[in-house]
Image (cartoon, rainbow, N blue to C red; front, side, top):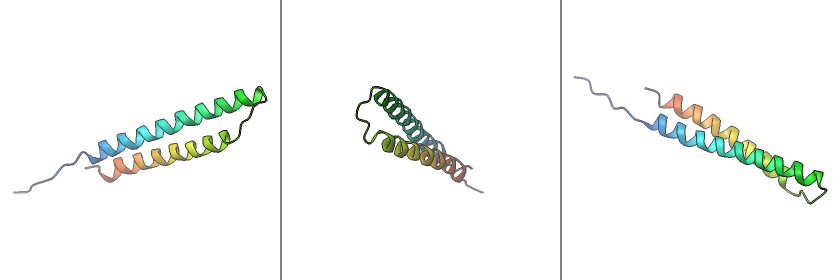
Length: 75
């Protein structure tokens, strides 16, 4: 008699890292838009492009981890 253990880690981790990717993409858009507006008004824009780049990196890394989690725990 064979027993098989099934886990929902692929779904849970995929969802978690997917949400991280969406949040990173949202922060990227918000900081980029804020930079464009502040630059057009000739206001201080220190750090906005760096924050946008970091958020983009988080978004891409989260998306990669979501794909890996789904494939690693696929039954």
